[in-house]
Length: 146
Image (cartoon, rainbow, N blue to C red; front, side):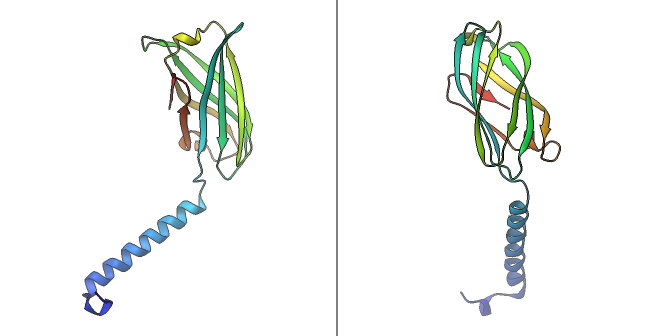
């Protein structure tokens, strides 16, 4: 079908749809549309308790000068065991960092799930950007969610 065979209403609808998709794509490209990802890579018992190893990647356009996340640990029965804050420090834009945390008095085998509850410190991007752009994953049997 050629453009000549379209009614003016159909042609206007096509032009409107095309312009909306172009403007939406442009807006997404201009913003901090990259993700901040945190992966639970390993849990291992240590003499200090349970050692959590995370891989964090900042795919946003700006460096994060400091990132602290509040996590909630759930036990094997799905009950809240504890809440704690983890300081991921600085995360340069486009870079990956590995961070380890020892959580005293925690048995790794009894951690069924970890919830990223909040990101009270996110220095660099606009307020709320770290939590808004956060994605989580786990390479262990323990689920990491947000």
